[in-house]
Image (cartoon, rainbow, N blue to C red; front, side, top):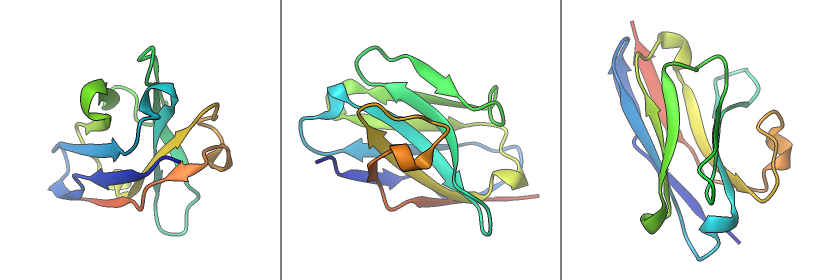
Length: 123
């Protein structure tokens, strides 16, 4: 099984940037799809971005396209979410996820999850 640990969350003013990190344990990284989701209070969890660890093909949700991007360091089994031009509506708990054949449109299709890291954006 895959263990995921997120880091890099915090508080930032609107227009600022943060980079979230997710480190995967074990030796299964290269055959996984890695993704980022976020969940604000009283809202459903939504998919933000994903990356195929073997091909490095990525997909970014329209709501953050142009401001966020996903990347990886294959050697350290770490996936990053670079968040630029942050807005107050980006405030949420951000979760790292992994799966073998998941769908970014369906959180239920991702079997492995980190505990989350909080991002708070103030105006």
